[in-house]
Length: 69
Image 1: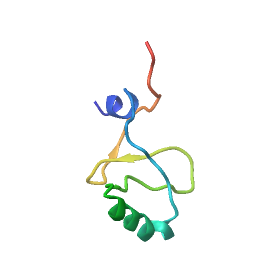
Image 2: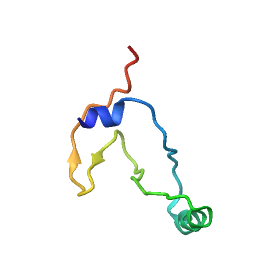
Image 3: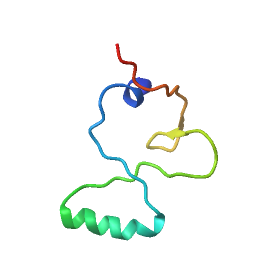
């Protein structure tokens, strides 16, 4: 099931990265425009991707992208 959520279909959300120093600015913009922004992860030095659930338990999955039929 996790593979379908992570690899399948179209994406309708905008994802972005930012420096931690911009956290307050982003929260203020979110409030002023009435747009909910949710932190979903972080970028660290190293290789690969690790995915965790809402309880910070690692999810083992294969990420290979959407396959057009």
